[in-house]
Every structure is written in structure tokens, then in C-alpha cells.
Image (cartoon, rainbow, N blue to C red):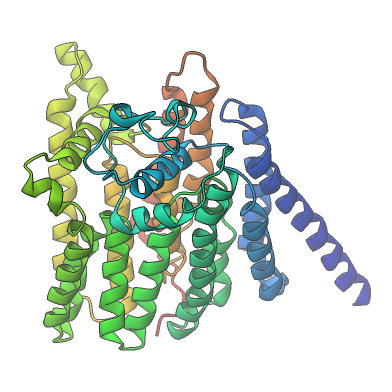
Length: 448
């Protein structure tokens, strides 16, 4: 038996080393155009991740959580190299310090008007002709992170990511607690905690989904402990971090209704809307509507990795010979809204676990019908999937397949490889059908 134990420990150490080195390489080394390195590192880290998912019971959970913490801390000091969104965060923060409102001024209008708003920083922005679309909570962190400006933007990025690291630590703690309260195996938490896409997109590329997920996690935890005010405030925080969690409010209304706490829903909705609107009301009062213009341009113009949308777009090209985004876009938005409302109100939601399931499928509907689907959009789905009482793994596979969209950035000039998108969605839809709709695969785990 001693020999077996030694063999398992050695294997764990080798796998842990491969995992840590792969994610470290992704965080510190490649640019967006270095797809061979990106694909190799993601493949290696996801290979280890898959092994741990299916054989986690052979490994001490504390060791796995320790690795999750260690890798996140390591990547805290990596400057984002696979995403240039960090420069917009820094720009918005510097705007606030210099007296400009990010919701009212285009970067192209004020570049060079203050030393902090330099031409060098402006040249690094990916959308300088768009007004910011980032929420007030995000802007607050942008402001804190840029209290001291640096010429290379490094420490501003580290301070910004320090908030993401703290958010991830809270998510780790309360995710494990949720699993235990709901009677789920605690090992299911590693579906989120060790997912390479989650770690890279939050701690390496500095995407704010980490804060949003933290608030969602807290809301479900407090709901499980019948602390309804704390749960409502936490859900409102997620809306303040990213407006998209508003899609969950119908399901929360359903939950409160069936538990005779409908007043809490009004509290959730009102606080969430106040958090989001408080810093843009100035724009509305002056009839500028810059934020709405940016959101409209984003909704009606941007296209990336949209599976169902691309299929409908192709059909439109075959029939009419041009892109029908002005028709398909609103139709998909309407279909998303109707589907989420139907799902939210059709289900009798009495338990927080049932609520999380509706939230999970609501986010899935949103992703499948989106015209723009960046890799980090999957992060909330991965979190919600890790606490389901059915053994779904399609989102874990999807989180690997979507990393192949980084291939697009290796082309000069840039273009989107539709073949990669086709393979991605073929596998995803096949596994969704097998795991969700195939009756013979209705495997459940305990849910108290």
C-alpha cells in the first residue's frame, strides 16, 4: 500500500507541475498572435483539469484548492497579454482622476488633454471611438487602481487584479460552503476553481466576470442560509458589476413568490437598478445618451463566435445576398428574453438549488443566442454548472473548445475562422443533447 500511495503522490506532483507551468506560461509569455503556444498550454492544462475532474476523489481536496489559490496569486503579477481590455480600464480610471466622465467623453476627443491621457495609452485602446460600457462598480475599481499612474501601466494592472484576486478567494470559500449546504460533493467545486479558462480570463486577462461571479455566489449562499436581505444585496451587487445578471431577477421573483417573500424581489430589482443608473443619470439629464449609443453599437455591430446567429446569417446570405443582422439581431434578442421569462416563470422554484438551475439555463440560453461570445462570457456558466445536482460537463468541454477562437488573432489581417466555430458548436450541441435532453443520462447527485 505504501508503494501505491507513493505512486499516487508522484503522479499528483507531476500533473500539478504541468498544470502550473502551463498556466504560468499562458499568463506571462505569449501575445495574442502566438497561437501555437496558447493552444499547447491550454491543451495541457485542460488535460490535467479533466483528469482531476474524473479522479478528484483520489486527491486531497485541500491540495487542489491550494493549487487554485497559488496559480491565481502567481498570475496576479502577470500583465494581461491575451486581452487589451486592461488599457480601457486604466483609461477610464485616469479619466475619472482628471475630471472627465467616462460616460460622456470619447477617448478620441480628450487624448493628450492631460498627461495621464497620453497618446501612448490611447493607441493601445481597442475601441477608442466608443463610449465606455463598464458599470459603476467597475469604474470604482478603475479609479482606485489608477490612483498612482505608471508609465508602463504594470502596477495599475496589478492593483486592479488585486480586487479580482480577492473576489476569487471569496468565491472559493463560499462555493465550497454551498456544495456542503446543498449536499453536493465538495469536489464539484473544482469544476470552477481549477478551470483553466476561468483562471486565465480573470487573473491573467483581468476580466470583471470574477467580481460578478463572487456576488452571484454570495447571493446563493445567503439565500441557502435564509439571510434574504444579504442575498438580495449580493444579487444587486452582481447587477452593479455587470448588468447581465438582470436576467436572473424573474427567477428570483419566482423563488420569493413561492416562499412568500415577494417584497425582497422588489428590493433586489430597485437596488440593482439604482447601482447601475446612479452614474449615468447625468448623461440622461443632458440628453446626450452616450452610453445608450455605445450599447446600441455593441448590440447591432459586433459579431464574434455566435453559433446560432452565424447559421442564421449564412441562411440570410443564401436568400438575400447580404447580412441581415438588423433583422436577426432583434429576433435573437427577443427570443432570448422570451425564453428566459418562460423558463423563469414556468418552474416552481422552492429551493436555492432549483433557482441556480434556472439561472444556469438562463445563462446558457443567453450564450447560445448571442451574436458576440468571447471566452470569458462562459465564466458564470461554469460557476453555476459546478453547483448543479446533475452531472453536466458540456460547459467544461466548451470552455476548452472556445480557447481555439484565439486562433483568429494570429491572422494578418484579422479574420474569424468559421471552421473553428463550426467544430466548437458541433461538439457543444452534441454534448448538450446527450447530457440535458437524453433521458437515459439523467444522473443526479444528492441535493438537500
